[in-house]
Amino acid sequence: MKIVRYSRQKGIATILVVLLLSLAVAATAFSMINHNRNTQTKQVAVHATTHANNGAWAAADTLRLFLKNVAESDLLLLEGNTFSMQVGDDTSRVMSATVQSVTADTAEPGTYLINSLVSATDNSAEATALMDVVFRLTPGEITDVIELADSVMLSGNLDMTGGIQIT
Image (cartoon, rainbow, N blue to C red):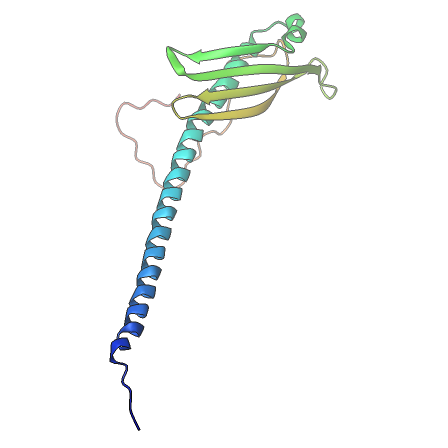
């Protein structure tokens, strides 16, 4: 009886195991790289939308300040108008507000509900934010003074030094 030795094939199993392990390590490495890249993209997107959201809120507040000074007889004329806004010389931000509707509030006579679409685009961040804002406006009752009753509540110890005046 003749015994045949397969001496040429002794290392094939080892080579296959090494190749499969290398493939698994490479797949894990590529997966981690892809995950890190996606995380960075999400962080940049959140940062970009923060700029656009701030612009939209600034535009909404600007529209609110404008509406404070509009006479009651001119309120209905605002419907359908679009107002463009700019912050100083900054041309990278485009803000606008469109007054969609002006209706009398049936719950409170003499009060108007002003529905507006506010948008802000930050070109440098490549982001846009849209807000649907409803203002409740009562002409003639607008003041710049806001009274806050019990606005400062302190609990625990408080040490105040320097030239602080509380009026």
